[in-house]
Length: 118
Image (tube, rainbow, N blue to C red; front, side):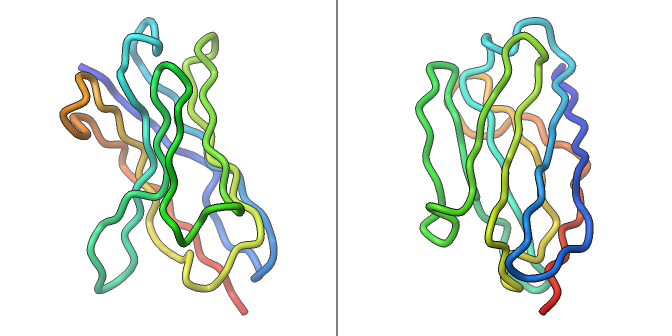
């Protein structure tokens, strides 16, 4: 079973930056088909923010393109989400996910709160 532990959330002013980190408790993160970050804001549905495959292919939600960058370190078994130029609408709980077989997320972290103030 894959366990995911996020960190790096917090309170930041609009225009600022945060970096989220997800430690993956499985040997060989490269065996995981894709890692991703989802978020859920109050009263809204959970949505995909960014995703990266074992081959390094990435995709992003339109709302975060050119501001967020997802990366993975196969040696340290971590996945990072660098968030720049943050906006109030980025406020949400962010979840790290693992998609073992390209069938959708099969493991979820506990979530980390990101709050962007004006």
